Length: 257
Image: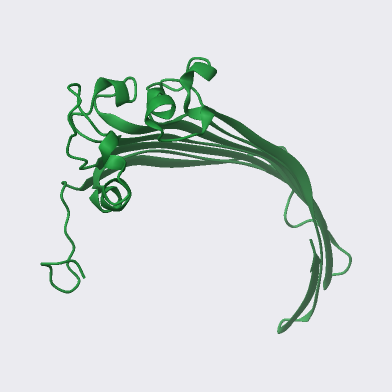
């Protein structure tokens, strides 16, 4: 328990707030092409979460007890208060689109197939701030950041799917279907200290913090791109199903997928 506080009480040294705003919409269109039913379903989300978080608990154990606060100085070389807080902005978008084509449901052989697309973005901004630190240890492009995370993540999903159902008898139905999918996820931008800290201050031996080793950033607000990662894959998922309904009270089924 922290000294001077009652049970279940906590203490913050910086104001904390959070503001969450979003808009979301969805649309479904149904129609026909000949005997086939056509359905389009789409949705869109735009969201912004911003706020400020106290970071003193971490700063105390890491900067004060581990003596890293000695590296926090102003332009005159004087140590500054290592009080640290985070100002953050997370921006999200998400859109999905699906188009389906289905044959008449009252026929003994039925088909449904379609296409799917989804795209999600997350624009990440986290400012770790210590007021009044020297320009030499401030992340370029910020006012007083000891650390900056400024990255853009994009997730893309694609799929094509289809299924055929066949009524062997009024009681027995066989179904076969499959889905081909692929995805591509990327993350690019910057995370780290001012590069001079890595060379002179000893904050990190990780060379990827050095902007000089990378080209200009493709993410607004980032001093350079020291992160540029992509993961992608594709595959196929099948589904085989049999159902037998001998009467209104019983249903037996088997599925392999």
